[in-house]
Image (tube, rainbow, N blue to C red; front, side):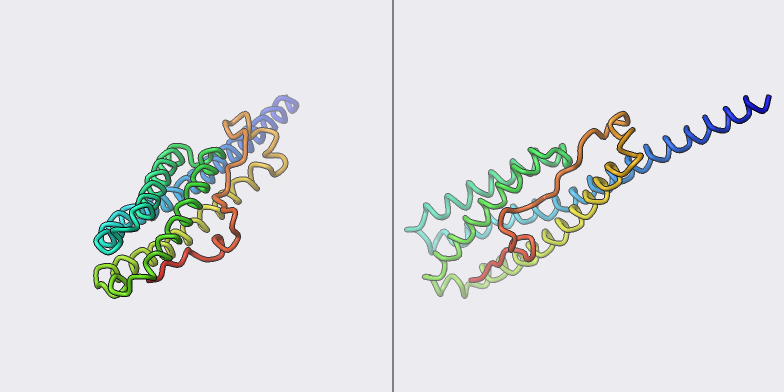
Amino acid sequence: MTGLIVLVVIVAILAFWLVSIYNQLVTLKARFENAFSQIEVQLKRRYDLIPNLVETAKAYLKHESETLTKVTEARNQALASLQAASSQPGNPDAIQALSQAEKQLTSSLAGFNVQLEAYPDLKANQNMMQLTEELTATENRVAFARQAFNDAVTGYNIYRKSFPNVLVAATFGHPTDASLLEFEDSAAIQAAPKVSF
């Protein structure tokens, strides 16, 4: 009889341990998915501001249509990549594609800024100043949201790979690490892209 009680206690402890690992994995995954949704909100806001910026600049930059087209195309590609990553925020390929699209958009915006330097009237335009201020504030929010996402992903990955959790994580539907949202340019990680007119 004592052996049966010991066996039941051991099975109960094992079951409790497995349930607690499963629940913690689910909690940590939900946290990084929520953190990604915060990035999504800020990036969508950013992507919504860019067409307004381009429209405001169009009248001044009639001869610079190639630059405006590049910015618009980069914005559209980044939006498509964001939508793909939103459906699977833990997918390494989707996160990498978003990183690449963001890098291209940042590069296009830098080219746009260079073109605007030649147009002091545009830089002084009230609408343009307001849009660039909003874009800069949004860039800061994106940086904070990206940091929160990367922190949540790191917590999830550490827990998933910790012993003995690593022995059962794949069984519970968590076979791989989630991917950090990284950029090739380390300066982009440290600070939001600067938009100045």
